[in-house]
Image (cartoon, rainbow over all chains, first blue to last red):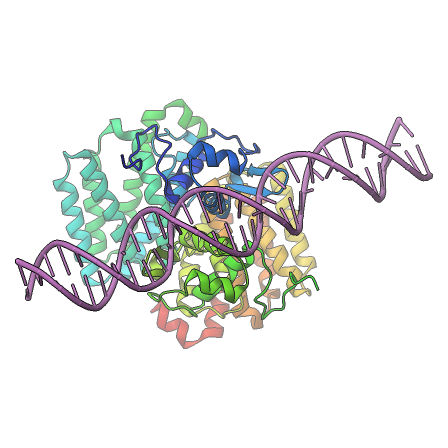
Length: 245
Length: 245
DNA sequence: GATGTCAATATGTACGAGTAATCGACTCGG
DNA sequence: CCGAGTCGATTACTCGTACATATTGACATC
């Protein structure tokens, strides 16, 4: 009985990462409201069946991400969302399966519109030949995986990552790491729209970057984002137009 | 002798944050090279004169920021910089006083060029009247603090923060938190250029946003960034043009 | 020469005890 | 009646010790 196995409902599993994820998820998903005081360390100890050290290390990590703040006597309080490092890949991944709201999707598309076309311009200017080769290769793979939903998503992520790596900008790469998880959240909402209609746009981006045409690359990526926006608007309907007007 | 007081050279001070900063600085500034194995936990214990729990909590936080990865028997290794969360305000702040390199400044200005003009557009569209009032107020304060170097920088930061808050985008706000620290690093380099010539550009931004003119706001912020780039190029000289060609 | 085994080592986990900081209630003086 | 200072209780914070576990590198075996 390994006891490290864990159902989806799971609470067990004794390692550090899982405790961070467990408490982190409960916070991000609102099981603990903003301003609320978390249970005492000792309560987590018995509830999760781990040592106090593990609980403390987990809370310290969450504090470093801006989710909580601990104080003697008062306890550990959930900070307002403005303090959360919302681009942190961990925090974003804890929302997977949550059906994110329209506000988040608008914020994400705003950010994508600022970042991704500009990143394509940099990629077109700075990519090495081997990087261009990789980008073309991943674009082909994308077309090939058209009928395999999870494989398509994975290929999409790799494509985006290769694009950002070709921009040769370390700060940008970190933003892209967050956007990548954001994309997964976005696709959870628009999954019913399929993804076949996005393949051509991906290929257009790959072509333009490969041709080192900065202007075409920017334009192609903008159109790709527009497709995402169209999908989101179709799924959300009024909740989306309320947000963008 | 409280022993919590700490000289600039300081090593003491027993609390958690300081230990994170101490080890974090040593990593970010290259005192521990990428790929290198850090001293064992026990060595940090005697070196920093703290308990093992504090050391472990610190290393866990650094691991969550992508700086290190711990493994039994091998020890704790410094990860390649591509894994670092380089936009994390903590990581950036640990570089203060380091005289950052041309590569970092180019990456930062790239990012600023993508983000800040677009953020001004959003601010012009979405800001509430009280937020516009705050922005104008901070711009005036900026002019008033012209001859006080540290006060000017603080006012500059508050101005930027108010601008990004007015964009009403949580993800963007986190990017701005990183950029803010990046700006401090940038100004450490260009401090010799003074800041008087940037005041008018700031006021132009405030005016355009206040007038809710998205296009003027975008343009004004772009020009403000261009001023920064000019200053950086003047200070760095060849090291900068090598980077941008 | 490839593979499996074993011991050494550093992190991982748990428990216990004591310190220090913070908050809330209470008391005292105005 | 109200404000300032005091006191006690609660909780996080720190430290120390002991043991478990996983990974590595060397050794032995086939």
